[in-house]
Length: 143
Ligand SMILES: [Zn+2]
Image 1: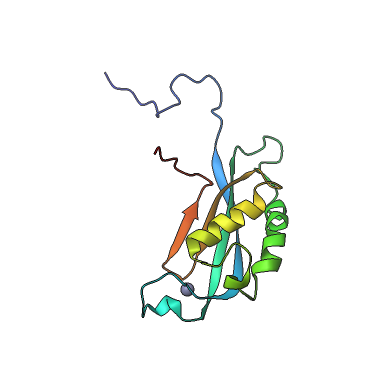
Image 2: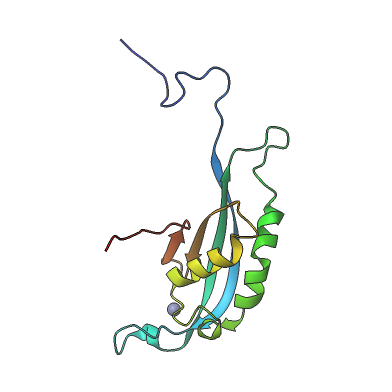
């Protein structure tokens, strides 16, 4: 017996709700050094990056206007972080004394989520080939 139903759509009557992600990418010029790397590691020296930071929103496109939210809303949500981070020495910013990409993603998340609960994911790219993705989740360990 052949079935051609796609996963998740076989029992739906009418149109399935489409879920997708949109993002806006920002560029931050900043200097940092990593204080906790092994002795002699190149990242212990002061250096700069053109960080690419993407803020994501997940949802269903509005049936009338066809978008999830206005991209301009994401730009506005990032603006206060951008003012602090751009052309800065990251280590001097409160909460970023060890400014790895991972800690920068957490920092941006914590500075954004209360005013912008639509935020679903943050991506921080330190170089063209290195970056990290954070979705606001943490793991609890039992003692
Ligand atoms: Zn670096």
